[in-house]
Image (cartoon, rainbow, N blue to C red; front, top):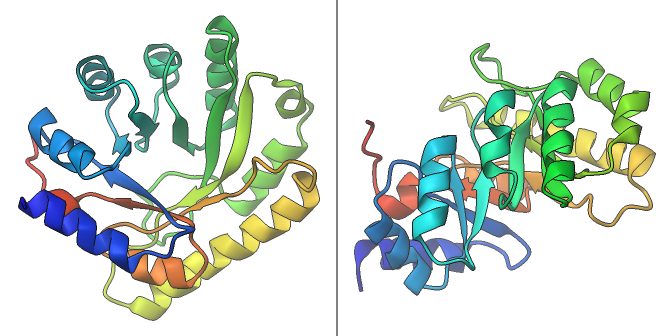
Length: 224
């Protein structure tokens, strides 16, 4: 059994059944993705549009591709025909572009709204006021080709586990709050995507039901 297969098996054994694993395959060659595929993994996450498009064209068609990186509005059109979930929606303008491309492709595109929960300024995401402003806008309610499936957030990169846990706790509280307030009758709103290789155990303990794991499966990435 290859190290990818072993790593994947080990992580799946640790995760509760209700937690969806997104294998973060960015910068990984197709051969390594196929090793995970052969082990039964079908959900993969990419953070660059061109790489995502190339892999979607060349790998099995039953893979669900998630866009997990920061998405520019002018690049939405390239992934709109096939993307299974866009994790990082951080503005009404981006949602508008996704809705437009969804209409053009005659499909409803599932999205997560990304909240900024970390203390690092470099991370993207909506703050609480921006989140409520977006959800209460008339324009948002007029969109018919996007569907909000939940929230996503990235914790501060730190060894302070309590800080990380409190950030995840805050996101879970916000998820529950807006679920009750805006999505009570919408069963699609069910995804809380938080937790990566370094902090997914904490995230799951704080209520995450989708984790994005790359290096713990594939090894350290080849930056290129």
